[in-house]
Length: 301
Ligand SMILES: [Fe+2]
Ligand SMILES: [Fe+2]
Image (tube, rainbow, N blue to C red):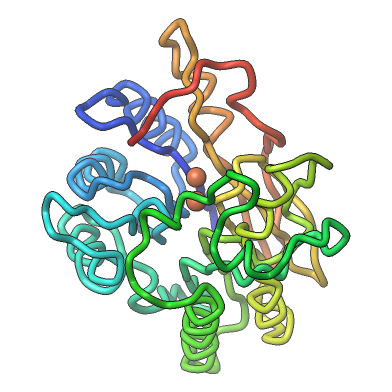
């Protein structure tokens, strides 16, 4: 099973990233995967997201999409709320663009299943030693620094409620897999394991780390016993680690764009090439760290 995976492209609207998308598409075609996975944060504008997915789709592969928090930011102009995006609109966009919307149902190929979730955060990644009051996490604000979902998610769930909801759906998806499935690939936007988060020992960065994922998601994966690979996004720092036999990757691109407009290297670094042979997971030339470091910041809003 050959997999190409990327997340957090944060496509600039109004065709600003067409050349980058073209490079990513070429790179994925070059890998020639069985499955192409996008782990969220394509665009907070659904029109931009739809256009990007249509361009990114690789005809020779099964194309899978899991949304990120930015993909479900509400759009007041067109009257689309976060919950409607997550439960209806994004599924339709995926269908129209040739992607399978993994939150709807797992994708099963022979003995392997791909199970997907946006994941969420319940502050289980918070740094206890900072002694920041719980209220600050719940309000997504600490000393003037705001976690932007505060202003852009309108579904009315608390974060703990949202995390619980998505984790229960994950449990359900795992529970309905047929007995012939022996290996599971988990795709999420938010992180299932705390150690995929990079703490920098400074604020507000380490405050924001509490919004990266949930330890309960990872516990479900370990408990299941069939999960061999976890692919996530959200953190813009690329990592590969192993947790109880689960090879885990974060595969983000990020907000940076090379000043010279040469997107080839960025696309090559961003698309992870992962292979599963006899249940053993191996990545080819996986690039770790922040691949946008030093590049000008591109505003994707
Ligand atoms: Fe992101
Ligand atoms: Fe994100």
